[in-house]
Length: 292
Image (cartoon, one colour):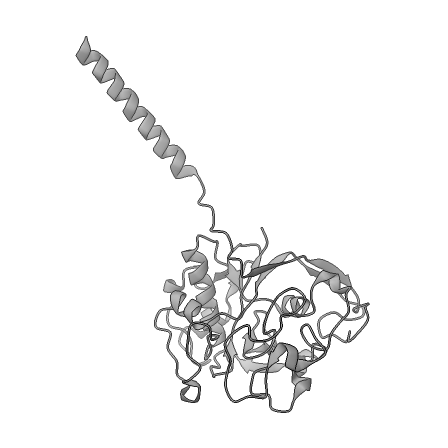
């Protein structure tokens, strides 16, 4: 009798354990929450040119056009060297003149556009998020091959034809218009429009006219609480400008006596168009996430 009872109890325990495993295996893995460094930006549909006081000339929001910005999060700082090294194997500094600008709180620099894609997907995977970028039918950068150094690279066509799923909750580069919208303070672009990202005084919000990159967050943030949207390093955006070039935003620390280079009213054609493979001490990135 006792043996039969023990067998029954053992069978029940095994049944419960098996059922529990099956249920747990079907549960989706929830992504880790975004860090406090990410600022929520409420999207909007902008009809035509910006209707507000201040400096409203814009490359992205123009008369006759309609732009819809979905809700998204933007990191309040440029990706730091510590953050980049964590998700990009073998990251090293190749710019000798900037050797003093090395440390956890300095922005990562010397990065081409493809480096940025690898970082975004690696970080997304590590944090349980759905990667945004697909190359070679894979979202895992380990399947992409070596990062191109020129347009003659063997796998160039695969890399340059990368696709992005903006609905995914992973990390990605902002689009041109998302970057401008955030720099202008969001809010459906109804508030006062500054010359620069958060001020009419460039010195208030930007590290510029200097010989070396600065640590992050040394200047005043814009109205959303986002730092260094002007100055320090230039930031890659995703949607290509033309051919094998893309637009770098923010203006770099090295723009001597050229405050007009930082104006939010400048056109895309006067932004810095760089080859996707370009790497130098003034180029880095900032990441965004589509709001779930």
